[in-house]
Amino acid sequence: MNVNDTMYINPYTFQATSKRVTGVENRREIAELLRDETMFRATSPEELMGGIGKPLKLAGTTSVNRFGNSVNFAEGASITLPGGYVLTVNDYYVAVSGGDPYNQAAQRDAFDMASALTMILRNAGGTANTVASSSSEYQKWTENVSKVMRYIGIDTSKPFTVNGMRYTTNSKGYFESAASTAAQEAYKRQIAANRTYEFADERTKKKIAYLTDYYLSTVPEDVKAAWHDALEETGINPFQSGYVSTLQQLSVEQDFLTGGNDNIFGDSLESSINAVNRILDRIADPLGEVKAERREFLQQEKVFYQTLLSKLEKSA
Image (cartoon, rainbow, N blue to C red; front, top):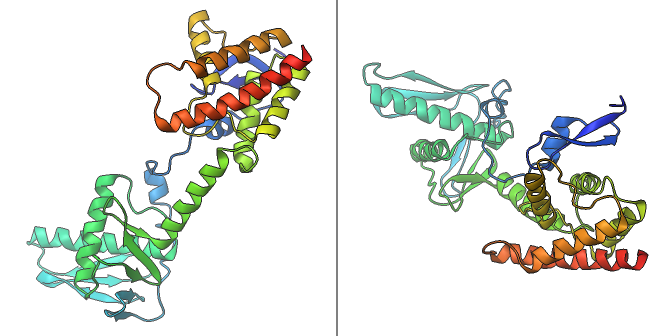
């Protein structure tokens, strides 16, 4: 193999394939680029603990506004719990002191509440974007935040504010900050934009370009030009996040049947036209039951490939 050649990364397995292209690709970067992003992905312990080494961003003075359902914690703020335990806010965490060391249930509750209060202070101050690494931990965190807030007269059944950050209860019953809600809404808007070609962000356009190069690596230049023109003309992204494209389906099926050949476009204008017709046939007669969301995507695919076919047939 020429030193300037490299292996492509298969879009399904993220393993090297036999197709080679000029240039250098970073395997991890490509894998991350192609892997669909999910909104509520699992959080690694490293990510969750990432803010622990940073000091808390605290208020200048401690205050509780029960009418406004808000509280500000400054360094030295303390909360007395049943059993004589005291939670005290310091620069980096909420410390536990006092209490009966033989009352293990009360001691465990105190440390759970101290941990929950530490994480909401980090979250409110922006040093921890994530407060838990699983649904069960998220639920436990929510319960313990409710407990500790109850002791200072804050009603968490309604929207409440901690150190200037407003919290509400999401659809799963967990507390969510206003910053998190805004970020999720922005994410949803961007996902909608990324379903088009015209309004997609640069990361998505880079993904489209990579997959285009992957599937059209052996076709003539006029086929590549027709594909690009179809993208621009229709404004449709044929590789939308959350859906396996019909092209990808057929490519994987052929790879399985032939033992390694996933190139359905071939190396000529004629073979490319045949490939597009195969794609349109599968769109018209998909495998299995098709859900409503996928039907919409299939209709968009149909418009894209009909436009591409028209351009290829004019070149024939």
